[in-house]
Every structure is written in structure tokens, then in C-alpha cells.
Image (cartoon, rainbow, N blue to C red; front, side, top):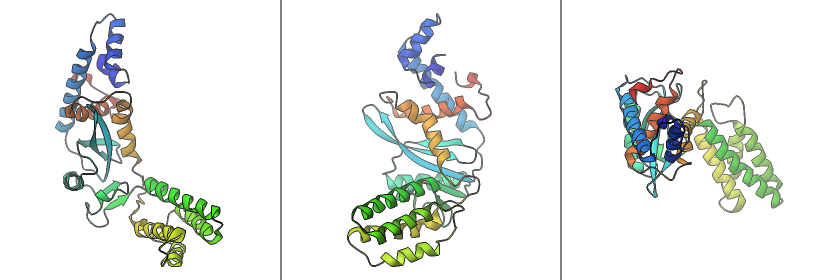
Length: 276
């Protein structure tokens, strides 16, 4: 009960008070030790299971508050099954480490496609044509930039630039999304291709980036986004991390997501005897 109380959002002290109210006295230190032990067992159970082949490998990083500092954590997720695969203590800013580890996991699970956000650290990790950018990330970042430039153009009374950004916003929202660069986008790129300064220069940079990444954006019919990875990070890690001062050790940082994933189970069944 102490472990479940903590994993559902109570603090160590709150979980101990819950047990006390149920006439089962405990202490916050005992709860902390029990959670750590259960997390390690859940991690062991996770790695003892048969390795599944993964078609869509989602990867994303997040910060982990730990003992007064911030540690980076990399999450690997089976996008289709929405299942945690690995959690590694690697910061996205550590480019060489990230590239080596992602390439290793990509090969180990036999993934057909790597799904990430637009972070440059993931470029070139997977074979050509097998790395796709999350559609939601791409539309959000490009749409926000286009809207900001549209507002700037309106404020500066530049109707041509405003119309160009309005047209770009419509192209970004196209459904179904063309797999290749639309002619309308190519025309916009050519219109600003020689611009280097001011508002036209900013528009040129945005248009060329949209054109360059258009074909790399995921068009998978089942799920073109990396939302499964983000949801799993939130459910197994971020929600709990935001309600506490931080994990005390790297081992606890790594064990917690496996325990959270195990307790949620995949088919509504969770055998607590394996971890408690």
C-alpha cells in the first residue's frame, strides 16, 4: 500500500501517514526503501522479458531533477504498442553519446523507423529514409514561427509578406498532407530565395527549412506523431518528478519509470508479487 500510495502521487511521508491511518505503522524512510526495491525489481522483470521486435521506435529526452541538479534521461518507446523499451541516463546535449546509444537500440530492436522531434542530435543516426520527424512537433514549431512572422508583417504593413505567411500556414495544415513538397511551397521559396536581411530574410530561412524537412516528416497511417513517447514519459516520470524535490540517486531515476510502467500493465493485469 505504501508503494502504491507513493506511485499514485503521495509523498513518502504521505504514504506513511496513509499506512498509519490503516493501522499499519510505517515511516517515510521505509516507504522510500520499499519503492526503491520495487523499482529495481520492476527493472529486472522488464529486462527478463523476451525482447520484442519494434517497428516504430520513438525516442525523446527529458530532464530529471536529482539531488539539487538536473540529469538528462532518454526514453525509448514502442510507438505502436505504447510500451516502454529502455530508459537511459543520457542528456540530449551529449550528442556523441546519444547517437551511439540510439543507433545501438535501433539495431537491437530491429526497428524499421526512428521517430523523434526535430532535435539535430538525431540526424544521421538511422539509415537514410528511416528517420522520421514527428508531425505534431513539426507543425507546431513551423506554424508558430510562421504566425509570428505573419504578425510582424501585419504590424509593419507589409501585405506581400503577410500573405506569404498566411499561405504557408495553410500549406502546413493540409490534410491529407502531400508526401512531396507542394508546388505552392516551391514558389514561395523562390520568391524569397535571395533575401538575407530583415523580415524577408527571416521568411527565407523558415521557408527553406520547411522545404528541406517536408519529406522527412512522418506520414505513417497508424500514428504520424511521437505523442506515444511523450505520453509515456509523462505517465511514468514527469508527473511524479514535478511533485517531489528530486530523486536522490541515478539508480532511483532509472528504476522509477520501469515501476510506473509495470504497475500500469499492458492488459489491465499486474502481478504485484513480482515486484513487492
